[in-house]
Image (cartoon, rainbow, N blue to C red; front, side, top):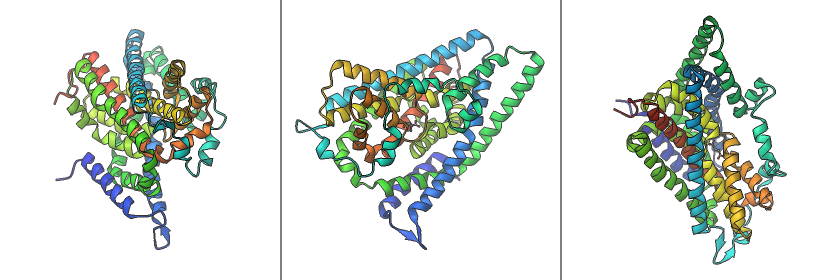
Length: 421
Ligand code: ASP
């Protein structure tokens, strides 16, 4: 009997932590450094997942919207989806802001911890990316929503633009002659089906890919990086856990009327992939697979809710931005007035919608928030050492929330077969 995929991935993950712990960044075999081997294999897996994203997002949204039929259904499903995204992200932010204010990880023995924490050594690369960001950049994020050139948007991974175009395309596809409409529908359905088959193939290699990705992180970050930042690290983890094991299950149970345990089981491969890749976009094919095949949500709902959610709905990211910005502000000794905290909440909500589902995307958003509350971008240096592992955790939360959205919306649309078995 073959071991189920999520067990294979989980074992690979644990094995990766063990091997990563044994190996040092300098270790090499036959003159080739082990880290570079991990890096190579991990990249191959990530590339394969990313390769699927553009055709998958486009075909699935176009199918999703055109299947909705009348403008009414589109409006209703769209309205529910947006409401779900905003409400859950807001819950997540509230949890983050409460926990970080109670724990106060940026203050040690009553004094701001900036000096004690010290900035991580090499921040130059990240600084180049985030330097000079300001609240005005939020506008830039939303400007890209209407791309001047969809091919360029696709090649640069600007999903918001691609989503917007696909929504329009799907919507107007239903307004053309029936004969031509049918051709397009068959075509996009075909593209979607092929992408899902390619996903199945790529997932066969998931245990190897996950092993390489996680082992690399463990070798590079090491366990020492965490020590000075333990309180911050656990503040984020506790807040994320509250969201994913208390808030989300309550929504699943009381609004969706389904068993949260069954949903966790159904989503295991997607959660582990999100954790290992730290990218909601790269995980999207797996998320769709799990929500449709394992949780039993209709293609009509999944193909609309999930591709949108992978870019727009990021509960873990919103929560993290908030905790990180307040932690940095505490560490710098900034007086956090009620007004400042409100602006952090609003910016976290807006940037979490705009940032891409790729690794470390939050850092740019945090730089925007820091600028808005009058702190230097270098503040980010305080959290870099633990960012990657927290990125893995928040991405799993992002993906989980998307999947809960699909289940809850499916149920409110009257679907009976969800998580029924
Ligand atoms: N890595 C996250 C994601 O893909 C985004 C972030 O918070 O950096 O969902």
